[in-house]
Length: 517
Image (cartoon, rainbow, N blue to C red; front, side, top):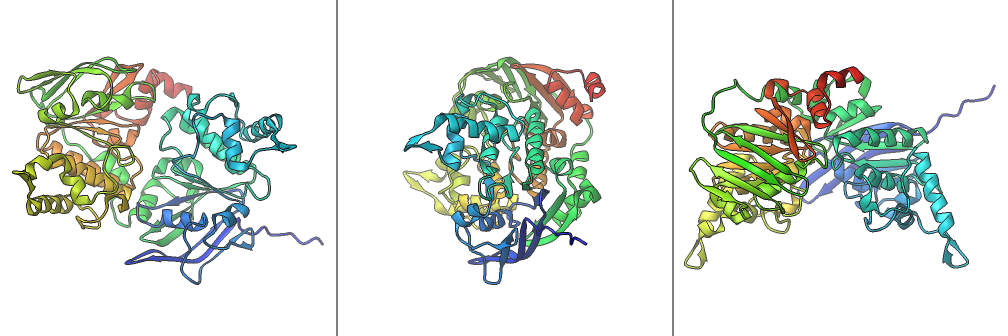
């Protein structure tokens, strides 16, 4: 009788610990990633996910006693080349794509150029590129500059480059927040790519803060919390609340947050701010107003104008707008400084250029916009500056609570709290927020939602532009839906469900959209 051969795990992680000065980032983690499975890696920012990935990638060397095997072969630590040799490939949010180059050139930069007699064999290189993309069931112009392709096609190039099957190229693919930069209508295409990678025999580690993606895509999930592997579970045996409980470690469920975030509809009185004739590259005459204490959301697919609205409104991006405040003051095309004088400030996501200064401390970032307040006769009152920074650190629960810690060393969620703190320190009247929870974990997300609601209760107005429908459904009193630069629909809170939002963004009737599905 022929003995059945049992395939070893694609990756077996045993007794993995990693200690930094003053911090245990990973504590005796054991994970088994099976052949051709999609394995979700979950946890709040600071849970140890990034550290684990960097150990796999050969960037960090773990504490003594750790062992990692790839298809039964031991992984030598601290060598990116060794990780690549054993077939461990990584696609990060920053894809490592050169946008001026073609797909052919970008894939060659990753896997090497085909050569013939000392020259690049371009026909062979094009054939190799086409073979890799065909494996993922993709078709687009491989000679087109990547900058002209869809975001999902750029991600596809990075994935194709990673699963090149020469040597051990396709053993394990690690995708770190792959949908963070994708418009909603391209997420399904990304999911198809991931499933194609699994079908080709590649195991996938999928990192995401969006739990709905995990339920749709993953076979199993491992949850890290404070550096400890809480458990590995079959996704089909989970529901949203159980998974959220594993991640957060307490009774706060994201579903509860989303369903209990706002109170009764109230008559808020005259407008705090009126926005008129807002125009930009894609924006084509948008008008709306915000009442005191009101949270108005802005939704729309990429290209709808949603992604530029916040910047144009405060003068950070090219465009035009008229702002009328309840004081009777009307300003046309304000500069960022003039908008700030009106009490209108822009809160950017922590990963966006200009959101904060990585090399400055928490204190310096919080007080920077209000620096004039602390300066008298050419001297800065450091004591007052520190008092204010400490007040916001405590108020916003920024961790660690150290005003002198470099901003760039904080987790994504705590960075976002610092960004909120630096603008709240000005005492604004209207906050314009762009993607407030981009790349932050479920715990920080809940804290940000609570912060917005709390300050809205004081009479502050909010304009929340977000690519994440969870943000809009969680906090908004109403949502303005953009399509081709114009408001095509306004959804009150009671109609803020996923189907209506997506249907409105796509310009489809909600009833017919449901029927089509």
